[in-house]
Image (cartoon, rainbow over all chains, first blue to last red; front, side, top):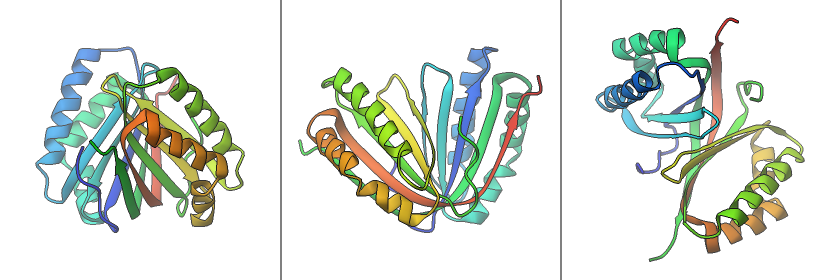
Length: 109
Length: 109
């Protein structure tokens, strides 16, 4: 996993329900989206999970609000968003939030 | 899914890697945790996904910081957290963030 986002970082929390259409195309697009995000200035990391019920959560972390807005307006992101509405998603929701604090734990080996 | 969290709400973003131990016990605990959260004052909703790679994301939404802290200190939550460290998780991370804005889309039917 990526390092913990610092206080003041911006989380873009994307939850979505997949349609049953074109799962291969969706998988390819998801990979392209992750690459496009990682190439942007201010990118801090991404984490994603999708269960068998087709509900998915993807969180991308950004240095600041400007970087998160830049990602929203990214041309490839915009293109894939339009394809997502046309084909892959039944619904999605975006929550933008500012990190207050982070903590974690891992098993001693 | 639950309604969109309003600006000023607090997101508790829990990402975790499951160990291979006691998956049934984990599933029961996850259900109890969701019930315990929903019973608290200030609870706004929860969303959760876990993929086949054992990485999971659960986000609980709270009215304000006090409600999020109350959940952190909830006795049943604390008990299950300790069991989680002992048995179910290899690692976890918690990010607490304040909602700036929310938007969404759903397919017209």
